[in-house]
Image 1 (cartoon, rainbow, N blue to C red):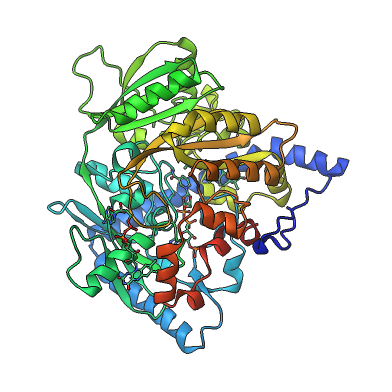
Image 2 (cartoon, rainbow, N blue to C red; image 1 turned 180 degrees about the vertical axis):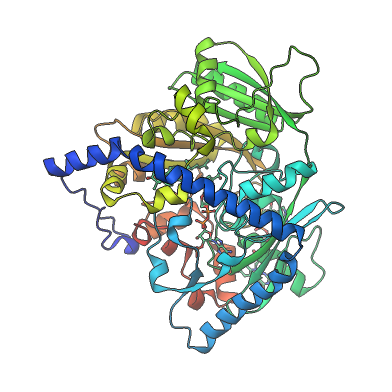
Length: 532
Ligand SMILES: Cc1cc2nc3c(=O)[nH]c(=O)nc-3n(C[C@H](O)[C@H](O)[C@H](O)COP(=O)(O)OP(=O)(O)OC[C@H]3O[C@@H](n4cnc5c(N)ncnc54)[C@H](O)[C@@H]3O)c2cc1C
Ligand SMILES: NC(=O)C1=CN([C@@H]2O[C@H](COP(=O)(O)OP(=O)(O)OC[C@H]3O[C@@H](n4cnc5c(N)ncnc54)[C@H](OP(=O)(O)O)[C@@H]3O)[C@@H](O)[C@H]2O)C=CC1
Ligand SMILES: CC(C)=CCC[C@@H](C)[C@H]1CC[C@@]2(C)C3=C(CC[C@]12C)[C@@]1(C)CC[C@H](O)C(C)(C)[C@@H]1CC3
């Protein structure tokens, strides 16, 4: 790991130490044989962990204890914040969620020196309102938990980010992107209100007001509502969120369009993203030219026997992205019906394309039949048990970046990624970015189609340098008025960061609600110096 001296002040100084021969051998063995620990230990542990929580959640929802417990839990959060005020506001506050549980490669350094507030006990779905078409949930509720609860009742969230363990708190205070984003935007755009504990310990509900706010309080809560997304818990502590739900059908009718050039992919993707009939649109690129655009619509399943049902969530099926690759190799347009929950979590089983690094035979037919039911390993357990030697290896060769750019910059962005890191598959996911206030500056007055370009994997580029390459990518993204997703390593200086993001509402809210004393600045939470 490089030293981060002086980075937060604008200087960027990381060094890549040379490895000795001995270190190289240890690194190689640990990487190659990590599966010897993951398969017999982490896989069964993950299964037991999941069973325990499913049983617990089922029980809690059925005895309806969550709403009452919620009030108690929130009062405890408020009491902690008040105690922090009374004891002289000595250190800043953050959530008590441990670093190994979060869905990013890094561990937060700042948690150790801050007052940790127990929002991590807020793990329940509180209520579903079928008339208002909303669900009220606590922030630690995960995507897997929500889909397991809503889909059997005939509902779903309009946007379900794929990995099962992503939390509502992370999707709101960070961000969430998914294939239905072309219709609904980002996760923050399907939220209707946030229940928050502010720095003085008060409990407020920030909500979006349709039309003009009628009084000062409404106007303030409206502004607070737009300030929360991307703020990473630096304005207030989220204790519940009310999120829109929509009716769903049991299948997604998915059409795969293989494409042979970047331009063909872009044209197809744009057309499918603009087509209002489509619910889901994403693309995977397998090299600079070959890719596949997929568009999905809700469906009740095949009308006759000619329709193909592909239950990609079953334990014995091939990893989804490798099925897509087969279709690309074949070159023909294919239509399949995929069960809805399987579709939402299509990239979970293979942790996008990261599991092959950890269990190289994970997609082998024998492994799938015997051990596939335990997959994927829990990311948090993997993270907690990644030895420092392997983390160094990831630091040197592994790229984990998502860049959000305007759709008209897609071709250029993929070319830049190819030039800099050349990692495939590349995830391409269009989403609509409305013109509203907040940290994402999009002031055109109308919503614009953006696209998330994600590169996850090992780069073989000889001249790859984590800091310099990432800084070049970041500079490119700023130049096209795009945004970097902040779970990834960011090497931007403070000035560059605030060139990419809009600080006007953010700064105003931080001053108004005494956040400067209470919480660190968002940059101080996400910059490289704050994470190891
Ligand atoms: C220096 C400063 C002082 C401030 N003082 C106060 C104050 O005294 N009291 C106070 O309450 N707030 C204050 N604020 C906060 C201010 O009210 C917010 O910045 C406000 O939300 C911005 O509204 P706007 O209409 O200027 O939107 P803009 O930020 O200009 O809006 C950008 C775009 O978003 C669109 N948009 C706006 N609202 C919505 C919506 N609900 N849904 C979809 N699109 C939308 C607009 O149409 C526009 O296209 C202050 C902010 C600053 C920077
Ligand atoms: N498809 C997608 O869109 C994907 C998105 N991601 C990204 O991964 C990130 C990690 O997700 P996840 O592990 O769920 O979230 P994290 O626990 O990493 O939380 C992300 C940020 O939100 C803050 N936060 C979380 N809960 C609260 C709360 N109740 N009140 C105040 N602040 C809160 C955290 O603050 P603190 O530091 O104090 O804990 C942290 O800064 C997300 O931010 C997302 O952008 C990752 C994979 C896929
Ligand atoms: C916007 C979208 C779709 C983002 C997807 C991001 C995922 C690919 C990221 C999020 C968390 C992530 C960085 C992670 C890893 C891979 C890529 C992940 C899953 C892994 C599992 C790689 C192996 C590592 O040893 C370790 C276990 C620490 C991490 C954990 C987090």
